[in-house]
Image (tube, rainbow, N blue to C red; front, top):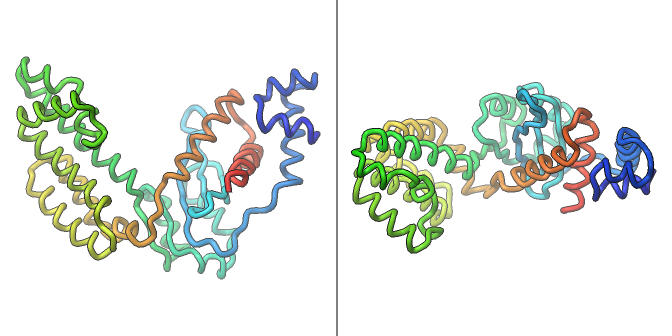
Length: 296
């Protein structure tokens, strides 16, 4: 069984089954039993920060809720669904002392998760992930770009078409040709110019700000500029930020991002693809937990 399990850690189930002349279900059963025996229970003591996210694992909106230790990357919890109950089942495992050590939780502004965190960890700070915020802002910018394309003349449409990467990417990531095309684009359309400059100013807050106080001051200035720009998609984004400034500024205190959990979700996706789908969530949790421990 251990030999089969060791092969299953590196090879697709079908390959292991063929190698040992057993069924794929037997490979998974052997592997699960070995992992259950060998893997230590999740370490729930002394956790300082958590990352919480959802991940689609089946067709038809089949999701799981995933919780990892933000500082170590250890998988702590996985439960079916993406509702309050899916996260409450994690906090049900924690003692009062274990909850008290958690100072920050990184999420992507999911309403259901936020309500549970506020209830279970009233002392902890919620950190809105910088990458998700940039993704939201880029979506607003792309909405403006598409609207300007529809309004443009036939000649101007040629310039705007295919410019999505130009306006969403950081200028430092553009080639010389890309920079020249961007300059032509912003000269052509004042709306896109304002939107692009606001996006770059927002990026600059993360790149040059060092304290939560500085971040709040710069965010207030940015939101004022955004709200007076008359660019409705960016105005909506700014209003959302102003409703929860603390979630934005908390990043500059705790410096946690969704990077580790996004990388973890990518690893999970590769495993599910290699397995041609997954039906046993207990086995999925064990496989992914083993992988998270190997990387610590």
